[in-house]
Length: 299
Image 1: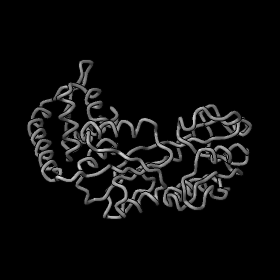
Image 2: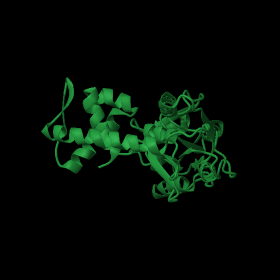
Image 3: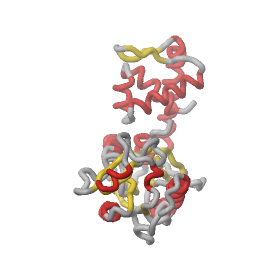
Image 4: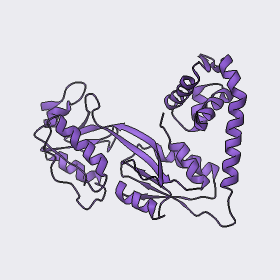
């Protein structure tokens, strides 16, 4: 059992329902439900009774509640004592971000940080995954949002967002290969992928390329930028606009699209992009912990 699971359970009881608890914890209701269900599976029984009036504890939930409150309280006191601020200010919270993220992800997380730590300024720095991880190791960032989950034991990471990727095509190409529910990935065969440089996010790049090849799409095309800098929207759109290439994009990205271009989901969601919030494992900054808690959507 983890503290976040105990905190989720206690907050649902205190707030009287999942919806209010999710708002207080700054997480989606579905993610909160998954967390509570994971705790129930570990304990082998139902903890909550959910109905139109909200949520209330079962007998098992009542038996757990006091101990759960104590665990959360002791954890918070311990963290506060270890990370108590020194006389010197901690400095800004520097966060690395990729070019493409869901619009609401960072504003909601930053709001939680500034509410808890009003004296801390949050500075955002755009960069590729590779560049951000290098900056974390060099002490130039406190948190990085990256596509490749690092295996370095000096770094910790949590899943921040999952996005089922769709495809941007010309309307002419769309008319040729799309179906009412989207585009089958194999129908992109014969077109080039308007891809980012492998040096940007090697693991994510290789994952996409392997999926394409498994579906018979071998025309990867040259990298849009081989120096590893993030590929700006105009480059992706220009490539797709030729009619000879396609570009991947998450739902709602670059909307509205320029005339002559359309976005479709990929049938079956064969390509899912994951973004990981990463930080130095030995970090003791409370602002980092607050930001990570706000971004963590892992089940």
